[in-house]
Structure formats: C-alpha cells, structure tokens
Length: 312
Image (tube, rainbow, N blue to C red):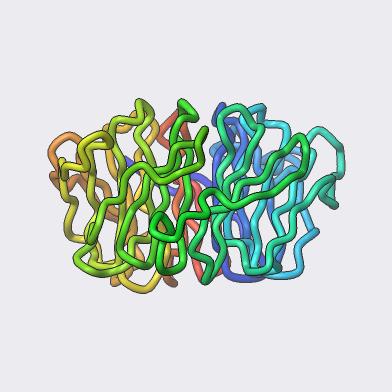
C-alpha cells in the first residue's frame, strides 16, 4: 500500500521530477525556476536534525519554469530543461553547485529531455518545434535528428525518451502520433498513427527490455504497444486526463502502470500484464503535473500545482 512518506514545498507550481538510475537521489523542478536534489534514503526516515534533511541541494540557474530533469547515467550530473529556452548541466559532486557548468541554448522553450544510456548525448524537444534535437555532451555540438519533412511530427513533441539499450528513441506528440527513431542513423523508423483517438499523445516510454512502449494521451487512455509490430497489447482506462501533461509510467518492477486522474487529483495503478485496475488514492489538493517512479523500489514522487512534491 502507498502512504505518504515525505513532502517538500517549492515556491511555485511543481512541474517535474525524476530519480537517479540507482534510486538513491531524486530531483524536482518548479515554476519558481529552482531544482531540488533530494536524498531518497532520508525521505522515509524520521528527521532528527537539520543535517538529516532530505533536500541536499537547491539549484538556481534558470530564469523560467523547469519542464524536465534527468540524471546522467553516472548519477553525478543533473540535466534540466526550461521555458527559458536553455538546457543546463549541473555537477552534483560539487558541494554547492548553484550554477551549471555547461548549457545549450534553444530558440524555443525546452519541454523534455532524455540522456542516452552512455551519457554522451541528450535528446530534447521544444514547444511548437516539430523536430527532435540531439546534443553531444563531449563536443557541445547540437543538431536536428532528421531533416526529412515527412519524418517530422506536425505539432509540439511533448516527451522524448531513450530506450535502455540506447538503440532507439521514442517521441510523443500533440499531433496524435508516437514515433520511433534510430539513434545511430538519426531517422524515424516507425510512426504509430492516431494512437489516442485523434487526441494528443502526452507521454511515451520504453519498457526496460525495449519490447514495449507505454503511452498516455488526451483521450483519457493509457496504452501499451509492442515496439516491433506497433500492435496494441493493453489499454488502461478510468483516469480522466485531457489538460495536464503528467506521464503514464511503470513502477520499479514494471508489474504496475501508474498515472494520474485529473478529475480527482488522484494517482491510479493498474496491472501491467492484463490492464486491470488495482488502486487509486487522492494525492494532492490541486492538479497533479507529474509523477515519477523509483527504478529500484516502490517509491513514487508526485508534483502538483499546490507547490508540493510528495513521496509515496
């Protein structure tokens, strides 16, 4: 059963969160332009002194809302994307890394980002931009994934995520499609059309073995697709979702699919193997903007308009 373990407050809407690959740390971003880095082991513990507080760093180097955060696979660097049109990298080994050590500038607000498993590349998407951008973390070069017009999305790309084996990327767009990209050639290898009944696709991510893609859309459905064939495997119903961009995600062992019900500000869980509903609980007093699952244990973080980050 999920119970509230910890809550911390930003000075603005909480917009995004993520866990490090080893599950030891989490990071949250906010409309207040700050990022908090959190020690997960301290979130469920009783705090006896100020040194034991879970929030171990607060980063202040953006000038607008934080839209996505991601840990480098080595866990030592945090990347962030913002409405200030910048992607920034922070060195978490420094005692007080308030400023980024590297950044990339886009022409548009940057919505989503994902590290290649090697850490050598970051893929990003931007508001109103229909193409995928790739950034080389060693040479600092940036380039567009594909120049072929028919391979591009035709509306804002809401989310980009690498497969764990690094061979493919998946993008979810307001144009209602999900696209698979070859990371070596940089071209689109498959387009899943009309995945959410003509409504926008908000999120897409691979399962760990890359055989499946989990998507969510503005038609209030969550769907599991077979990567190679594009076949629909399961549909998860019951959560109203049409305004916010909270993703559908797997829990740590992929036994469950987790998402948000906008009508009740609740978190919902389904059985990933058969699509059956498991549980639902009211998580916040205001709309939920984001959820993230630990890769190593059952913990979940939720982010809301009520300025709160909650750990369950």
